Amino acid sequence: IRAALANDGFTARLVREQQHCNVLCLGLDLSGDRHISWTVQEFLSAHFAQGRHARRVQKIMQIEQRDIPPAANASPENDLRSVAVTST
View (tube, one colour):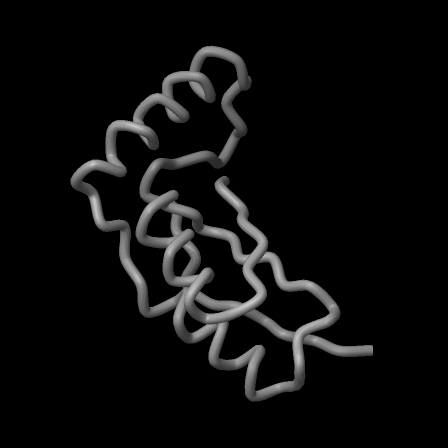
């Protein structure tokens, strides 16, 4: 799991493309439903860009494999497929 905080669609797209994040964290201070929707859509429509970013992500994965015990249901193919937005 790679999570990132994004306060706008531009940042959401970058963390997905460059950091291969599969979890999007949103702050409470986002300015309304349309802004949140745009941010989530940018995140979901982006894909990992590979290229020069792959080396950094590979290093992170090596650290994860070395230092973090595997979870029962972990799979490298797991990816974010849907998101639920709730408000209280």
